Amino acid sequence: MIDIDMLLAWGAAYKKLSAGEMIFQEGAQSSFYYQLVAGKVRWVNINDEGKEFIQTIIEPGECFGEFPLFDDEPFAASAVADEDSVIIRLHKASFHQLIKENPEIHFAFSRLLTQRLRFKFLILKELATHNPENSISTLLSYFKQNRKNICTKCNRLKLTRQQIADMTGLRVETVIRTMRNMHSHGLLRIDKGKVYC
Image 1 (spheres, rainbow, N blue to C red):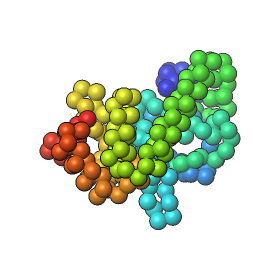
Image 2 (image 1 turned 135 degrees about the vertical axis):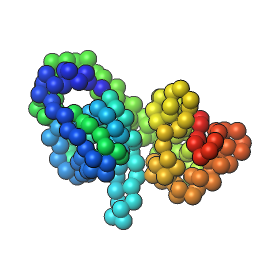
Image 3 (image 1 turned 90 degrees about the vertical axis):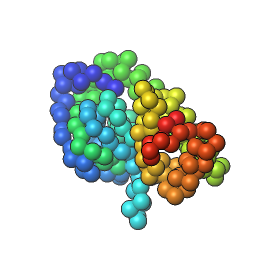
């Protein structure tokens, strides 16, 4: 999202994370801008029983947890390293000064927040239909169109069926059964357990 050299010039620092490490928790106050350098981070809500609802999977170069930077409210979701990862973080006050002095970055954030909000509208609409095939198909189409969570060279889905279930609110068994049905109807391809869109 923001050039790493620029972040470093403004005082940002790298932080290494182990797989499964919590970066921040839903409801906590924010002190930093976060951007993923290497690895993978999931941005999730966790209910009282420990079940996760994945808001999104963050890939290198993407920022996450930015809402509190703009509204001073607590984090709306938790961030967890999916694998060993490296993030870069910039103190909130420095981030505010950075975007004041670089309006093109501020505009890029407005665009990003709008895209993320559109994605939420799309998912909520599909959840309301209670049609698993539509929900999964819409999610996969969105990822393919936005070149996210799908290999751009071979169209292989980079998410597990459990992650798809956690994003759509479906049971993993429903996702597996629905994806098999979609495969038999030629809507996607499953080859040796890998899903291709």
